Image (cartoon, rainbow, N blue to C red):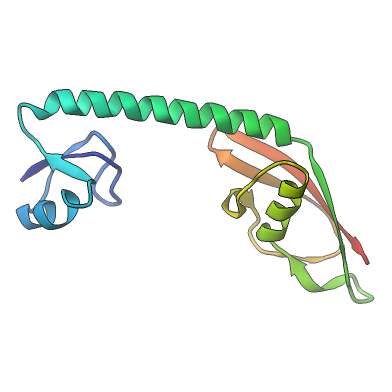
Length: 147
């Protein structure tokens, strides 16, 4: 059965793609969840409308992300933490704490935007990225000092 994807589906295709899938998969999973609709002659107009709306939404989201990144770029955060003699923290500073610190500064950031491979567990200065969008990245400096 031919369907047109309304949203990107992992291992199947992106929004607007026409793909061939098993009839049961389309009928029982894709169509009821609003991920796709059956391909047909009347669906070409529908695809064009949805694609245009999607592009507009994506452009608006990208513009907002670029604006937030420009506002946040160069910000600096300082965390006072308890640490041992060798500079190892008793706890850690993770993406969630960094996001909360940025929110307190007036920059609402979600934890998933903070690019931190593993929590900070030592005193020091760390440069990290806050990625709102592939085209919108802000660089933030995080200082972890002894309490």
